Length: 288
Image (spheres, rainbow, N blue to C red):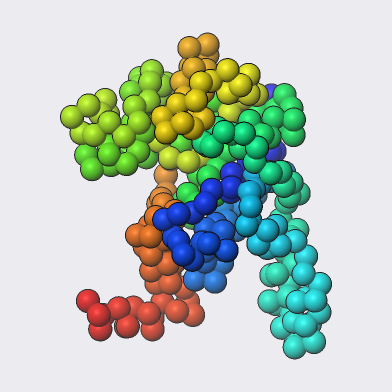
């Protein structure tokens, strides 16, 4: 059984929903209080057993590389200031994993960064997490939940959540057969079908465990909706050759690529902080 040690995190998007803030700063570097979203994503992967983080970048994404690199000048300054705890925290960011950076090349779409990592992945199963899909679970991380299901079935696994009727307008919706309490074998995925056409109230979100045969499928997948190469189209094509599963993951999901999702994450995280929660809650009570 192959152990999953590599994770692709696509971070080449323009972040247009946060312009003008993202004109020069990657959307993945937007902070949840004092830690950028992308660091939470990497921490989830590392906590799930990932050793190699493959960040597929684009123009204006240098800040992400700098964030996961050593900054000796900053560390030296913190040491002189006697801020050893903060210095150690900064150093540990670079030590979390082996970071690999490649530039995205090819048609626009979320299938392209996965295909770009083909030579690095080789013939191993691997994980994919979107750089702005934040998922919080104080027990088992979302990706570890997927890896555990993969280890049982040895077939590609998609992450899924329960949604309401409004959610059928926002997510890909699964049509599948229940094979375990939280696992469905996928027959098809309908992209944002709306409540009238939705086959279920189970929506897909941005984390996957995939097998290397997805690369050959991606290479043959036609450019789809919006003139983009879609990973979900390739996964659907792969499902004609082998079983594909979806796992209902436990935890709380924040779409930090949206303004409302990002604000919700900041509020919830602030309320849970020992150094902020009490005063922040008191402030919110004056506003609500």
